[in-house]
Image (cartoon, rainbow, N blue to C red; front, side, top):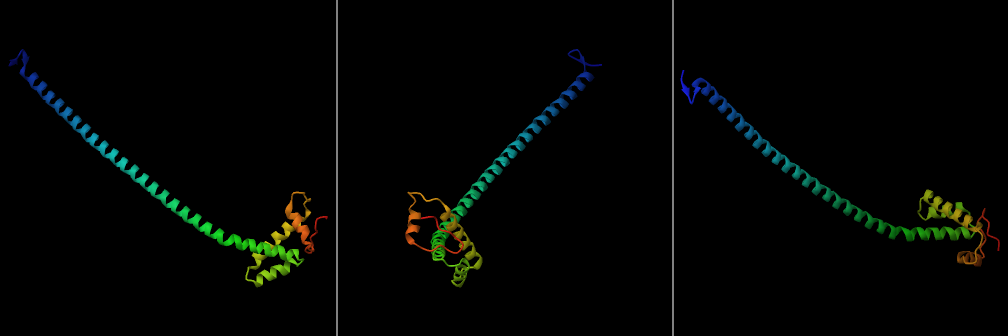
Length: 166
């Protein structure tokens, strides 16, 4: 049997084979770690891109919502600018007619003839009737100029309503 440095050659051969196998295993492990590192970088990049895309989408959605709210508020302001004077005129007309002593049904019919839907007319007349009836039952105050104005009109109350004591 041959010896190298006092170690039998077959044992040296098997040690050399084991060292080669161990070296191959180390190389494979290093290669797997490199591949895993690449995959992690790709995953991180993809995650970053997804977050960036989601943030952009959220910002765009927010911009759209703000644009819609702006349009809605512009439309609402336009609607209010058109409707409030009309409603005020309608309420003033109804109050004047009721203060003249006209029957609420007659006022509703008069509004229907003018092109206002009957259900809307009845709601306005009922609301104004309630307001006048409630307001006339309130105790008078010295600083309340509206009651003094109503008193100075000397108008007969609508049917079914009472005037405050004078």
